[in-house]
Every structure is written in structure tokens, then in C-alpha cells.
Figure: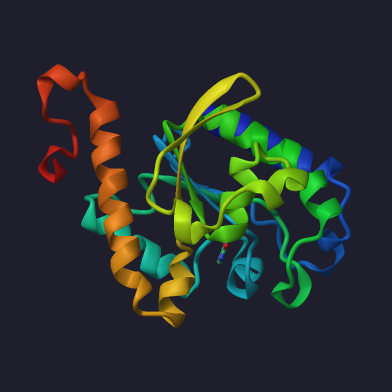
Length: 213
Ligand code: URA
């Protein structure tokens, strides 16, 4: 099976086996979207109203901003893979509760292990704390906030697999706070550099995104 087929099987398992009350209120499952062979996976918190309607993550304004930021480093949403911790929208976009997160976590870890990206970008405070706590909601309180962590590399080991995590502000945040735009743009350039450094042997100097070096 290729990665796309493995992801399809996983999606079906969530449909059939995930126990979660959010399923009843949601219109659609929002599993994930993009390139299943991507080097970068973006993880957001949970689908919003637009995503619930369409079944596709980041189709609303936050997604449009994300696409603009990706274009600045020569990528689009189709080059990366994007998903959320929760696959179903919490009513009125309320914060996910511990049970919801716990029930979803094994599927998210499985999704990441199928794709095996070099970089995981966590979007926003919630996703950052969750991933840096080792996908353990109980450990989230011990992780520093996005203001301190954004744009910095964090190597982590999940279920025996290594990933480099780069926290970023959620693209929706800069819609409400334009001062964050500059910070987010800088973080995308850092990610572009890191991606190109990891893509080629360092001695060769230039990577696929070499123009950012
Ligand atoms: N915000 C998120 O975190 N995820 C989405 O899919 C949309 C908005």
C-alpha cells in the first residue's frame, strides 16, 4: 500500500471506530488534506464551521492566509499535508475537552507515522503544547507558550520516530492581530531554510529552496 492508501484506510477506521460525541453534532469528518509524501505536516487544533461544511481542513480565511505564507517560500497547500488534532468540529468552536483529545490522539499519531514528515509545524498555542508534550494532553501545562517557542526547532521522538517540530502562531491570529504577521512571516522563512538544509547534504550548499539560504 502507498501512503495515500494507508491514509484512506486510517480515515475509514476513524469513521468506523472512533468513539466521540462530536461525531453526532458535526456535518463532516475533517481528516486531512494535501500531499501524503510531504516533508512538512501542519497540525491545527480543530475544524471550524467552513471546514465542517466541506470536510476539508483550513478552507476558511486562516487557510487562505496559510497559502499566501507558503507561496512566499515557494510552496502551496498542495505541497504540504495539513490536518488537525480533532477530526470533528466542537460545537460553537469551543475548546476540545480531554476525552475528545485522548480519543483522537492514536489516530493523529498514526497519520503522522504514515506520512513521516521531516518537519511538523504546530499552528497556535494549543497544538504546540499538545505536540511538544509528546501528544499527551496531561503534559500540556508544562510546555511554554507560543510567544516563547514560535520559530524555534524542537526535535521530538514519537513512538520511536524522530520529528523536528516548529511552533508557529496560528494564521487566524494575524487576522485579529496584524502585528503578528511579521513574526509569522519570519517563522515561515526559518522553516523554508530548515527544509532546504534537510533536503540536501550540507556540503552541497544549495537545496530545493536554496534561494532562501
Ligand atoms: N483552524 C484550525 O485550527 N483548523 C482548521 O481546520 C481551520 C481553522
